[in-house]
Image (cartoon, rainbow, N blue to C red; front, side, top):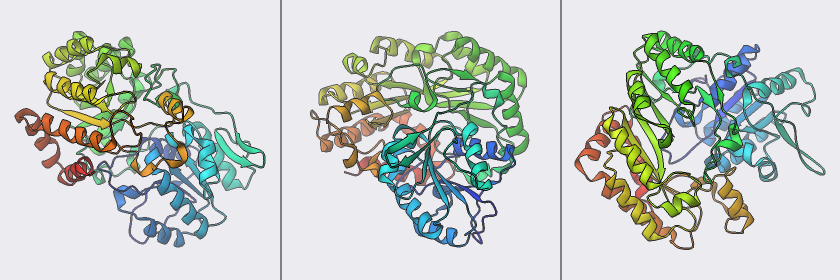
Length: 469
């Protein structure tokens, strides 16, 4: 891992979490850590540079590259919000290291490979999908000076257009190389993003659901894949022995979908005697929960879950293809509240065809559910989602006019014809004020931000983002 000091990087391969401005969350990047570990398993040394964590600016990035002219490959991990930053940083890389091979990978390039290569002259290759299988092959070719064009998962330019090679993925997740947690300074990362320290662990991959706003299926596929319970427990035991962790976060998209697997996982956690507390911040589907599941979750250490509610209007839920109703949501949230597991509601405002009345109904619904933790995100048209493709095809969204810096939950990217951007921001502010200016939510907000490491700063950044016009 990169440590600021004399700016020296000993490896030939640099993996970069790019510069991000105005973001309240700094977390361990599990995807890059998987790739780092996969490279190490092949005997390939790499370095992870986490620009937000280390306070690295684009100017500092240039300075670091100038001190490390031996670097042969730079891989940028990209979400959509990183588009403009990576575009600039890859040009810096080409200016300082013209022979260096630059690669863009992650959710954004996976879903828009042709657009990335068209819009980013500083990027040589796009890497699509999961990196553990294909990226080590690519790096081996780079280091050996061999032709790169036959490497799996990559996309690259040719005179007649962009060529996209076949993607490979790991079906048996137990075959993934062990994550090199011993190389991570966990204490360098703040723990305020969730109720427990944010140490990400993933037991499954895939999402078979059809939600129109979600792009998970475009990145990890619809087929569910599972690590064995023993494999997950081994990782957690290593984390506890190496870093003395007391809690962690399951970052899965659909951890509770396979009821039998999930119950077996909880039983394994109980039997292990690790006594770790954990939560699911990515969100679980309410319709996968029942009293037995919630009971064993709590006994296994689960203390908090995020639940994707999205809307308080059945018409909008149907439009989203959420495949759940407000009646079921009320029933399931009441069930969660009877358990000892604390729920956080995830809501979305500004979905296409949503009116101001619909949004106000969602805000009232959040209050009615009587949970004391929630998030109101402005609709983001994520590349790879069905709604993104639909809006672009219909001319309601022009990809060349998107300001990718605004691909955040507190910014307006899509201009809903029924609710102006100004009104949408006003409604989001109103939602947070109405929800959190109550005693129980306010007390939780204080505990989970103000009392945690760098939490006050995170809360300030979040409030500034929500309150800005």
